[in-house]
Length: 410
Image (cartoon, rainbow, N blue to C red):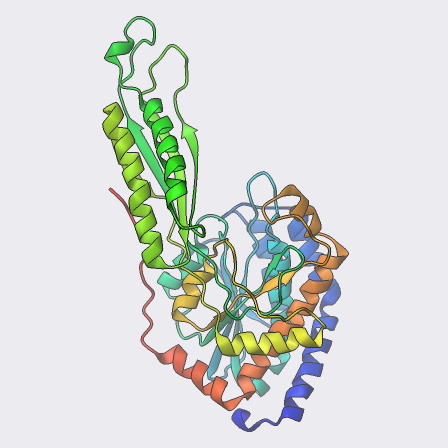
């Protein structure tokens, strides 16, 4: 029945969905502003999660909290159609600078789209899931939930992400880097820094040498690779040779083979520093590996048509210059869409104090509701177009075991 829908019926769904977003506009706007005003870190998003759950229940969703054993995760469900759709909701903030990645806007767009779609779920023949995914900034909530089965049976997954002004609304061909985050611990031997420095083994020296080695390595790696690091611990008193030093670091690349090659070279820098100073070295992963992002072509086309309706720039993208998301893990096993939401007039980069302020402006909330409408239209188009609907249903039933993504290094 749904595969035979005409283009005029699709337009009818579009009108109803736009009206649905408008119906919930005030409450979703208040929700997004509340999340922005009360930022919570990864796995600690109790207020944001509770507020979203309450609004979804008001909109007719049956909501399970604590999905995958994560206290601030949730799964809201409505409808019973064969095509299972997931709208991902993010709501964690960054340390010190709050919602400088605009997760209040991500939450608002996904929630508004979900609320608009809910009354039409059975007519569209979909089971709609609004899945609350904590800890995107640090912790890999989606990777953990994917592995735990929270996305089993899902045929397509969607969300949006705000960025600065001037980025095309056409997501086709864009990506995001794989990223792995690690802790390197050097172990030396304490001694009096004045009376017997020769009896100590200086772990802080190893930390310095690792920084120098990685700094020199940067000249020899491809331009789209990234290594970032900081010293978390390197002594506590000037008169004690530091016996422990800790360096936190991350590696990024656009493909997994490139990422793995980069990680090996960076590990060699740390091992060389340990060898030079006579310290012990242990490297361990601190978070799940975030995999590269894959945009689904059909979903990207649906979204691009919607943003063209709103008069947005839909010129072809040259690719994304950086950044990572645990939505990449979802996209590796489920057809996914993660388009970029360009905030008008926003010149500041994400992860800055200025962008945090921009994420709470009328311009930002304006495009958030346009994005919510476009997400809802993208889902509706996928549900009523025969080839897309069939492909996404088939994708949900394909063998797609979630992979273990935590890499532990000895």
